[in-house]
Image (spheres, each protein chain N blue to C red):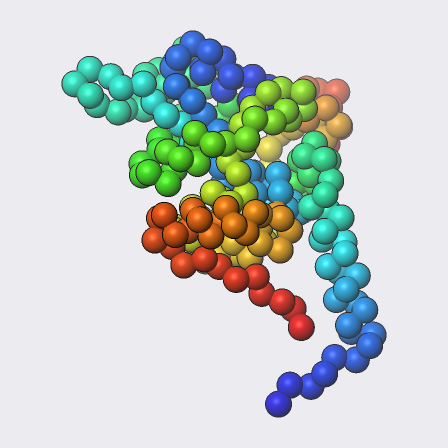
Length: 72
Length: 165
């Protein structure tokens, strides 16, 4: 038997859904910056398991290949 | 990524590829929330070579001449691992022909339509493709009539959007 969600859980799911829709509506360049961030988070987890880093070596501001002065 | 796209545009301008468009996760990200991915899938129509053979060799040679070397199934172009996928069936041919012209970081490029991305994922059918279908249905605002029509023509079962509650 399915237990109905409490109001609190329902509003939590609604907020998560709204955030996803807001993320989907971002400009592609902003999504690329989020992707770079996600890649770096995933890399930090991968590296704890001895796996190599795979994040794209792009400057998170300019989205161009990193130079010695680039922002990580 | 604009540096990578500029290289792809140069390859097309020099007829090393006839036409290209972004597919896979990076195309899905155009319509939906970002999901972690590490490669850029590029669908290409290649010029027909001697003996009507389609081969990636001229493309790889042109890239190597520009200093971009293959690493496994990818070519690292300006920091991004790019996988070139020659169109291999009528659905992909259509998807590439009807890809949307867009600008990313001010660079003109093409991205497969959400409806084609869904159909390609349905056709491929791996677990991550099923996830992509769900994501694009929920967030990609596909044209449901067009999606149904493409599914019908390629004998695919049209997907239904799932609801959370």
